[in-house]
Amino acid sequence: MKQEKITDFIYNFENVLRRDTFFTLSELLTNAEGYHVSDVRPGNSKMTVKNDLVFGLLAHMREQVFAQIPELQQEGFGWQTLDFQWCNALAKGPVKEAHWHTDGKPTELMIVFYFHHTWREDWNGCLQFDNVDIIPKPNSCVVFPANIHHRIQPSTLDAQSWRYSVTFPTTVTDQPWRIDCHKINKKLSELPYVRY
Image 1 (spheres, rainbow, N blue to C red):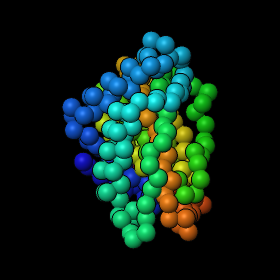
Image 2 (cartoon, rainbow, N blue to C red; image 1 turned 45 degrees about the vertical axis):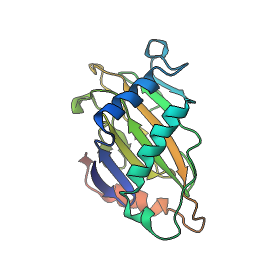
Image 3 (cartoon, one colour; image 1 turned 90 degrees about the vertical axis):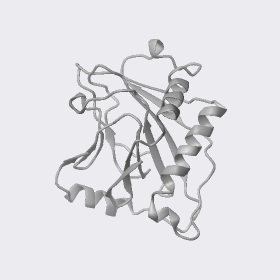
Image 4 (cartoon, rainbow, N blue to C red; image 1 turned 30 degrees about the horizontal axis):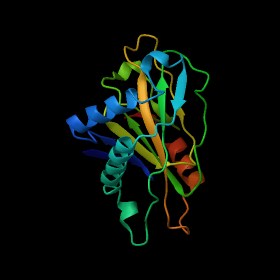
């Protein structure tokens, strides 16, 4: 697993799962009941998948990823069991949902895992923070505080694949700990533009 720390508490991981595990999870997610590629409307379609095997694989992936983040290895840190997640399917071209937003509380971390099989950098579809674009590479994931601003860059019209991701929030159970989102957003805005 390749790890890259983008800035304070934003991490990008590549080759997260073994190849066979990645394809198993991808197949389970794209074929989950109620989430079929042919039924997804144009734009950004969301659905919560309830499947014990999916939960098991995602929980396993989360343990592997969190073990690589030094801040989460300090004494007293812990996190809740994985209890829900949602899938996104982003079609090519402009979507009205491409807006700046936050996803949660100061005590939550977001994990976004990409399970499409192929992606090219010139198709865009990046997860965007101020001055930082993270390319949605297959079998990669991004970990970031839930309360910092981000958005999804629309894919180009010539993209040959839908952009598939599964997102799950995790509450860090050390309650006195808070992420200073204003500090992180300020640091991000001061960075030169970078594309990962």
